Length: 179
Image 1: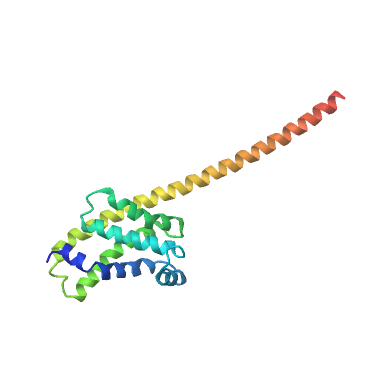
Image 2: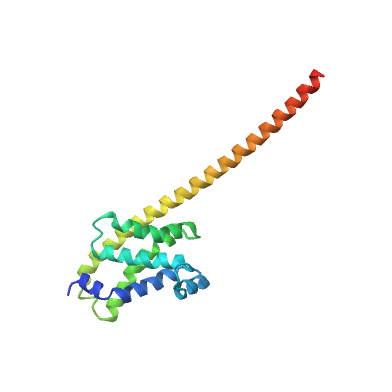
């Protein structure tokens, strides 16, 4: 059996462990909620994480040959980009996959058997992590641009009001002078 076959056969327990690892990066109360609540409308973050890691896992098993993984990474990273995560914390979920897979293989005594193939798998995970980092940075840039635009809009409105007040006073002063 190849490493890919092993990972496909053990997809459910690996994804369950990976989901647990991702959720544990959140504060304790939030993690408890994300694990417990199954309703996607009540728990959209948990649903995004679960669907995202399922898609990422599938794409990694297929060798990450295309950008098909980006939408799945985006589902997870976009949420983490607006939360209080550092860049390292935001993309650390990808690296936890390597630990989860190694842990499962170690429990079954298969680590030595798949050691050579595991290096390639981990390189693929690293590539996905770099893609996740790029997505994180794009999201943060958008957030900062939105903040700058909002400040510009506020400043513009303040200047318009100030100008209106100044024009109003000038008109009042001008009408006084004409009298």
